[in-house]
Amino acid sequence: MADLRIAIVASRFNAEITERLIAGAEEALRGLAEVALFYVPGAFEIPLAAKRAAVSGRFDAIVAIGCVIRGETAHFEYISHVASTGIAQVGLETGVPVTFGVLTVDTDEQAMARSVPGGDNKGYHAAQAAVEMARIVKGLG
Image (cartoon, rainbow, N blue to C red):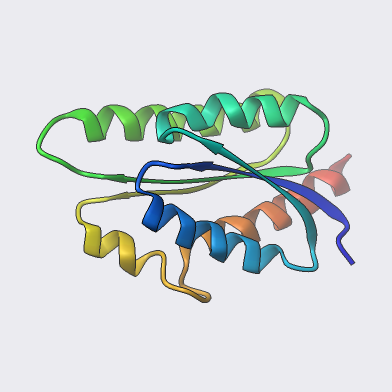
């Protein structure tokens, strides 16, 4: 029985990869949590949506899903930095666990390898961490 409420905040950018990560997260959460899925344009926007979900009081944890692939400019570093620090900040500020399922990779091939179906899927891992952290936080109440 689903005893947790978990939000997935997912970037639409690099949709082929993020949809595979979402599928992995949903697989890991099946039967364990009631899941709400929210899409944002890109990884840069994940922290704000995650914070709104956290402060809503509706969720025990949030899974952040996205994919940033290195290109020829410094854009990769800026987006990766904002996404990672922003996601961590949301959890620390709100007390609601926010797990990191945002791939930051050099190539499309690396992204595909980290979003394969099954237990090696990084969305799956992020969802497992969300369940564990939600239970820990509830237990520490």
